Length: 170
Image 1 (tube, one colour):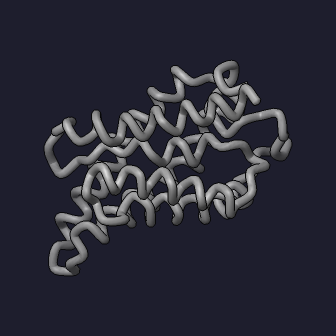
Image 2 (tube, rainbow, N blue to C red; image 1 turned 135 degrees about the vertical axis):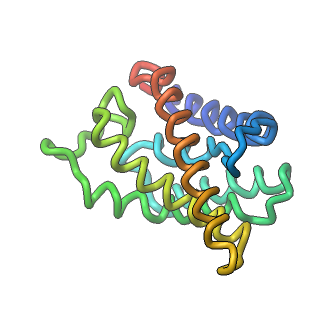
Image 3 (tube, rainbow, N blue to C red; image 1 turned 120 degrees about the horizontal axis):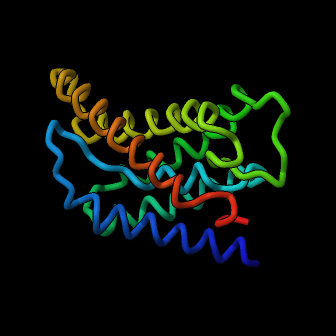
């Protein structure tokens, strides 16, 4: 029960940060800050993919309603919720996945987290930026926004991991 309460707190925390903080961060170079993918990443290993996709949709559509992004966050979160098991199965740790551990840096290590979260975050940002711009003539704009948003969000997620260690989610 305590773990459920912590994930509900995390749900509302990333929703709050995405809606009320990231909209007001103006770094330049088309960089957008994305907090939402960290919620999907930090869900337990044993969660059902359909439940994860539903949670991603609910979180995304809630954000979309408050930020007028017309389903971009919802579709991006459903995409990475679908891709997460594929990425985790492609890059398993040497000792395999343990039901006691969480998919966070303190349990899985920096290398695994950077690889898996990096792929999921890149997929999220690419999907979001591509459908936000949706013009092949704007390839350079898409690439600039993709890489700047990806790097900014990855750095923020790594800092986020320092505050939410395994003791916080168990």
